[in-house]
Length: 318
Image (cartoon, rainbow, N blue to C red; front, side, top):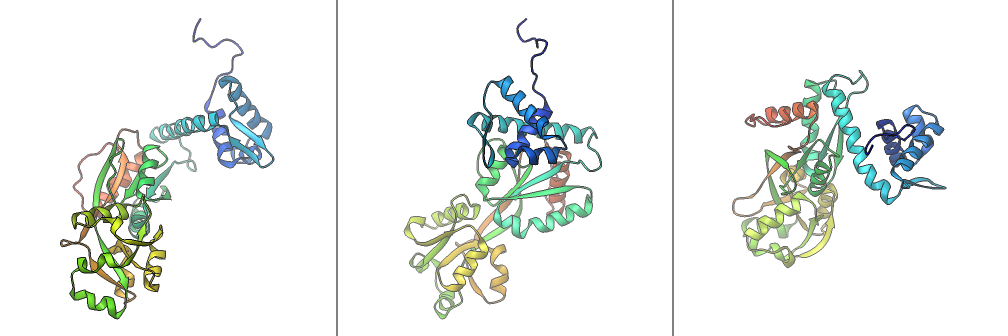
């Protein structure tokens, strides 16, 4: 009968998928065998069974190990999600052993990762000492991609990108400022309008996917300035590198006040408000409301709301 598994026919199972995912990540059958406490022939048999059932080559073997074929890349995306769901089911119904609890994956853009997340994690771990956390750092666009691909359970971004079924909870009010070297020329400009000199200076920008850059461009646009009017001296990802470069005279930049406050307070940099009302922007906690979440994610969101006194409206992960 159609759809009925015939005797002797191979049937895909989670053990096979787990072996496949691990080989894809380690690029090694022997390393996978060690990590999964299997023999190498067993790992090879799992992969061979999958390839036979799907009638495709999943892994290309070479002298350096094994890499995913095009079909393998497609299966990897599905298999990873299936294994994650299995782990969620285990945790939800108390089937994880003492040492096999799931890990809460937190994706964070640069500013919240470096200046807000450490304090949040410390408070969370104090309240829930048995939980395990993994931080994945990217720019805001990368954070959203990880949330939508279910490679992260919760995320932190410095901007809102309207993609998929993401829910954003603004929890911290940040400010973008113009930072400059401490020189007589810029000290004198404290008394003049930012618009009178801003476009005359070489500028160091954050990378394209950065929330800081997106929000800075939006604020400048409201001030009547297009980013193309600047002489762009450099594009950099790391705020620490940007600050050192500004201090050295490479150019000015626009950064989060959070990132610049230490150097400004120590007299290493000058800061200027961005726009008439300042460069205000929200830092957001983000998750995919349409995807089943770990109970740990709900507890984490609740802790962030408590810390920043956010009204505790119910959300799908709490």
